[in-house]
Image (cartoon, rainbow, N blue to C red; front, top):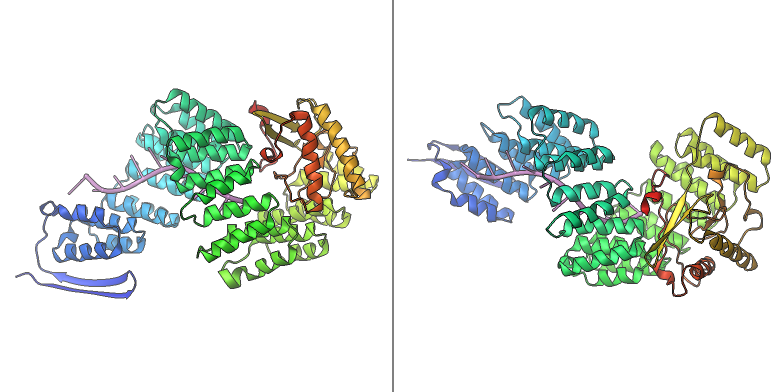
Length: 608
DNA sequence: ATAGGGTTAG
């Protein structure tokens, strides 16, 4: 007679413990393969628990194979703790048991635990195989831990796994996510076989490292050399690259491919389209795509909130936020960045501060440096610079975060000609060893505007002494399938550049006529090195900077602002004027994506 | 036999 004592106590949903004792002999699982099928088809916890208890009763849990299936069922339900509990009960976990559990921890946002398991595994009788390495490489990718990733890569080579397709793809992704694109490309180049996943990983590696031109070039290569069509993963990545570059036409062409392939029903693809159209200046299209989504989650909503904010549609942005709340969708930290951005760019300072203050109280989200950065920016734009400064001072932040905060104060102080704060913020940044070149140039230019030439020369010689060099900035716009690039201090590189300069002069005059430009702050061509010739032309909610025949939008912004804002009309004028030189039927809303790379450099010469 | 790689908002 077989006796089983089984008690399952459910203390909280899914948190259960059981004890058992049995005197049955172990039954081979092959006698009952239907469990496997049942487990694979179970998508709810109740049925898995029920199968679990059956397996337990029948003594199958002594069988590694059966237990592995059960572990995987729990992993699929993201019940990593339950899977782990089962795992620890196993007498002889094999490679599959270890790998499954590691993957489970990575999927539930705890990749560190998979490293710990990997170490333990190396001391056990189970030996890691290609599956295990692919899983561990992914853990490195998630953590952007290239150190560990390189070590794994070396082990992979030593074990002779380096020709495995999946492993190579995981390595490409890992190197890409840790900002080592060239290493990613080296792997991609030596692969004997590639599939759509490997191509997508490489495209994404480029796009995520500010090399979207290379991403699109690779995509073209894929289209020309492969026989099968791109899937939704690849298309989402391509749309993303189009958005970063403001390549509206290419974005539209890709959109057509998406619709023909039926991928527009995919929410991730739809979200990238929303974002791409917003970045290309076509917020109307963003809205159209968004409104076709059945149940948009927090990400597409945030995309729309940000898009509206960048287009100066602050009210609409806030309405979208309200709509989202009404639909029971919980905002996250990024959503609030968008909301604060909207308030900042539409002059809704008190509303913005209210949101900042209620973030934690009403939504349980702790404001962090990126939110304070928005607040500093918002106060700065409203010319409440002393408050902005006081706020920046009170925030405790790591050097990287502090740099963001003080960088914001620096630029907003420059815009308002607050020399004292420019110097304060600039010195803070130099102390932190962040944005050093930009800080020097900004300080120098602000001194020059104030006519303090002694200080200008002091800073310039300090820069020379310390060998600080400022990369030239550039911007570009796509108009009617042609890309116009504007370099700082370089008129020649832009087609019809002289006409642009001429029209910008006119713009300057018009703006002055309307009193938009502060007397002491406009169009001072600072006597500095060629590469650093940058001067703020106007006080805008979106800043339009003017150098020697260049248009530089410092941080990558879209210019299109509501008519009832003073600034906007000036911007609108600017684009009307620029449009004249480009084509008569130039559509203002179709332009407007300016891109700068994170590190201040750019590769737009590759663009052609 | 069971386990592994790619996509979205700042």
